[in-house]
Amino acid sequence: MYDIYDAVVIGAGAAGLFCAGSLAQMGAAVTVLEHGAEPGRKILISGGGRCNFTNLDVSAKNFLSSNPHFCKSALAGFTPYDFLALAREAGIAWHEKTLGQLFCDGPAQQILELLLMRMTGTPLHCGVTVREVCYDGLFCVETDKGRFRARNLVAATGGLSIPKLGATDFAYRLARQFGHAIVPPRPALVPLTFEAAWMPRLAGVSAPVITEAGKTHFAENLLFTHRGLSGPAILQISSYLAPGEAFAVNFVRSTRMEEALPQAKRARPKAGLKAVLTEHLPARLATHLAAAHPGNLGDLPDKTLRALGTKLNRFEFVPSGTEGFAKAEVTAGGVDTAGLNSRDCSSRIMPGLYFIGEAVDVTGWLGGYNFQWAWASAHAAAKGIQKTQHHGR
Image (tube, rainbow, N blue to C red):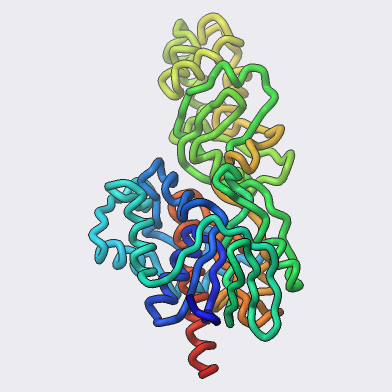
């Protein structure tokens, strides 16, 4: 153990471990403090246990932030292909799923092992409670396992999502202590809840849809649940919704149903609405929608069919709420980027202090983007620390 470290990293998730490993590769003396019993718990459950560790197509447009330009520098400095090179070197086999998403062929444990391997020789302390952080020319981190002193301090403790894995507000408290503002945290990539009595009857029904809020839209799958709506299309759009804000769902992506239903009536007047809707929708959803319009298509006014068709292409939903941080994949908001340098995520207020990963007000889409932000922001911070250490010697 060093008397004075080049850096103390608080948090042994994706960003913290990658930052510590990058520093170790640069020859820095670094240690990692983790309040959980083991490192990388979120990594191990990600991607259904296969870890969606990056995406082939990453740019600033895939992220939400009060400053949409903030993430550009870090993302340019460490790309998905840079991480792929590390994965290949470690012998990790991977495959591409839809929309450029990359997953391990094997278990997510491989990614954790890669991160730990890069940290060879770096002390990792788990089960540590940080009691106080102060600065007296060095950062002094007082814990229940002793005091750690360092020239630089990296906060990589994430946000509030999935508290059962140990999520806390530590990064926000630390940021406020040193004068930083916090963009109010909220659940992101989260299932939506509704009070509509009919929705639970469709639980388990999945459909390819387009969700839309403002100028943002996602073409992915939607899933009805007992409490509301989930699935990739819903998780994606949830990050863009203010409480009580409506969004639209197009249940028939390839057909203008306002025209198709009257045309079906003229072609097959004796057909039932359910039979026609089943050609475009999952059977249970078609049955539910057709229940309000019994009889044959020929018995239904064109006005009714056009109205239903319009609704199918743009069904307006207003959520009553979300499943909250317990089910949110990530946290939107966090340490305000206005107080950070975009080149290395360092504090503009407190030299030597860094905030990386989910702790920062940078939130990625579903599909490997948040892992890429973890790698990129961690790499940027490590380079920043290396640069200041070099200049300081």
